[in-house]
Image 1 (cartoon, helix red, strand yellow):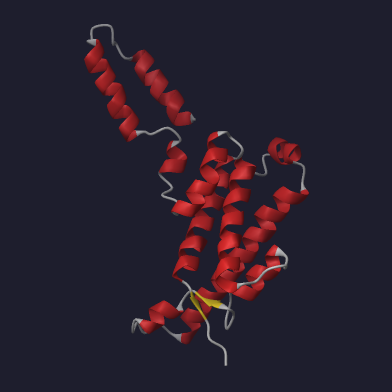
Image 2 (cartoon, one colour):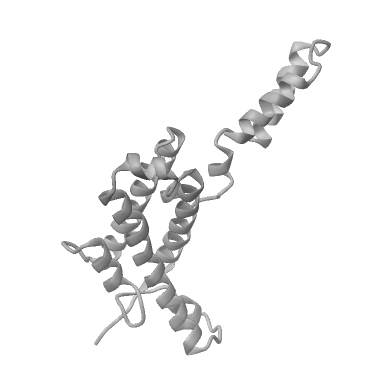
Length: 185
């Protein structure tokens, strides 16, 4: 929104009376290429499923729904890969991710011959688990259990928070897509 206001000021302050209409239109087209509508969302380069789930709501300014829909997309993909169902969101994440859990987000690196320490690989697994559970607790639960009007008025959850959460979900989703199922005997 700030970018749009800045561009409007730039255009209004520019002496355009002497420009031909075609030249002016070309300038505007080039500005739109450089600075697309919803620039802050566009330049986050979100994972495609996350962006698709959130974009419509984000553009309407419904940041709560944008995060909720993106989280649901992530959770549904976790369920699809693990066959975990009929559990709370937190339980799904707890059972799916972590050291010796259903999914591994680090095994592919080990299998490609990279020499990481056991501690590093365990940290990657634990990090995916912690961040996934954190998304349940600080996003999904907060949005589901608090009045949206209170969240808006307090400033606890604003546009930048939405973008940050979408970026985190994008990271988690990319790791989920690269994950492999652990084989237990």
